[in-house]
Amino acid sequence: MAVELKVPPLGESITEAVVGKWNKKKGEAVSADEPLVVLETDKVTIDVPSPAAGSIATIAFNEGDKVRVGDVLGTIEAGAGATATAPQAPAAAPAAAPAPAASAGSDVRMTPTARKIVEENKLDVAQLKGSGTGGRITKEDALGQLNRPAEAPAQRAPAAPSGPRPRADREERVKMTPLRRRVAERLVQAQSTAAILTTFNEVDMGAVMDLRKQHQEKFLARHGVKLGFMSFFIRAAVEALKAFPQVNAEIDGDDVVFKHYYDIGVAVSGSRGLVVPVVRDADTQSMAELEKKVGDYGTRARNDKLTLAELQGGTFTITNGGIFGSMLSTPIINPPQTGILGMHNIVDRPVARNGQVVIRPIMYLALSYDHRLIDGREAVQFLVRIKDCIEDPTRLLLEI
Image 1 (cartoon, one colour):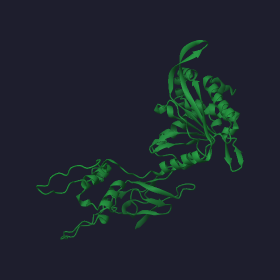
Image 2 (tube, rainbow, N blue to C red):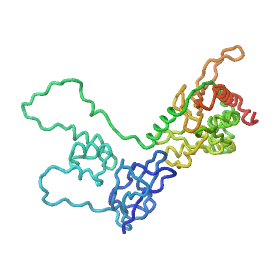
Image 3 (cartoon, rainbow, N blue to C red):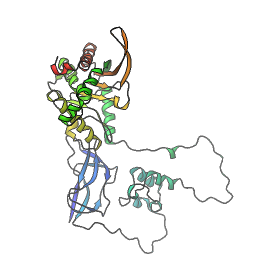
Image 4 (cartoon, rainbow, N blue to C red):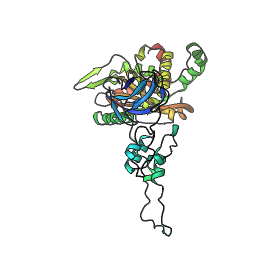
């Protein structure tokens, strides 16, 4: 009995996805609840499990195809064997030109880019040997056949080159992933709808670094997580947001919506790019809880395990380009938020202290904000408040 494998609900307001990867081929055995196909949306990656044990009977959509909620991705033959016998070719097939459309069908494993090259250039798939994982045909395999020279006449002289050498064989055209398209749309939206301005300051990280060094072993032993920098900056941001509520607000038409809760988005690197999961009610969480939450988000982002709900909302965002070596940047706000804090790398720099030049661990901070709602004075004071909290972390404990 054939059981349909359908595109599941993808989350609020998301109706379509792209088939990212099939984990099994047609005819292969599958177990119930085994992840069969990966779907990519503009926010998350979703594993679609097998609805029954058996074997894959049909595959309706190939990698790179768009699908909508409810579409039938394929069917599972419940209880069927592990493999299916491939259809045998006729014993006396006529010698004729290959039919690339049929050869490039779903029974042949190839990357979306390779499939496009095969179909556009009418290549014979039977002559292709896949060098990818599991024998998959790659772009290089297809280009290798496309660029293979035909047999030339014995006395043919080489043609003299004219003009610049073509570079098409050294270029690769791939479609943007749904996540990257969504990021691009959001960035353009932010630039076109908000009056973005950035203010900067520097912060001496010495006090926080000394505090971490002094208490790291006991903190780790008690809480099972290391004390990092992010928990300090989240707590400092919450204190600054309480003092300057415009930075925690959003513009909705002619209204300003002030939010008396503190859901802090923390940018982390995922397998497909930067994502921003949200730490809910950050003002109610301890330093250890914040470190555990951020660490968990980072791990699951790399494994594509974040849920859509964890990526939605947020009243303010923190991004740390310093982990990649960034000295300074102007981060772009995440609409409809009105502010984003940019952290950067820590560098020993000469600074003046009590009339003496000393070497201190300095980080540059950047606050990008929507000038439609936040004046320069409030933005500067907001950043100074964060600086004060980091340079004297006892303020975070005493809430002063």
